[in-house]
Image (cartoon, one colour):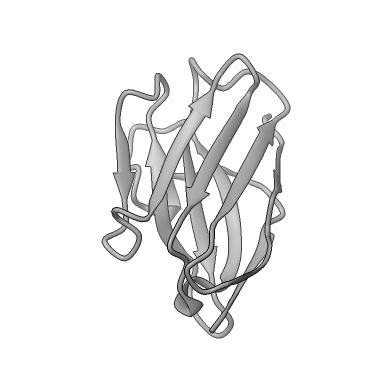
Length: 124
């Protein structure tokens, strides 16, 4: 069972950047698609980005396309989310997740392993 630990969250002004990291307890390259989700206060958790096992395919929510970049370093067992041009509406707890099933990489129900989350706050 893979364990995931996020880091890199914090407080940033609008227009700024942050890079989130997700460290896995075991090698995930051959087994898991990795994703980032976020949950704002009073809202449901939503898809942000995902990356295939090899890193060859990436997927983004329309709201972050062109501003966020997901990447992975399988040798380091780490997935990253580079967030640029941050907006106040990006404020949320960001979660890293791992998917082993064959279902859609955009669907939260297909992810079986989750980190504890890291807070991102964007001030206006």
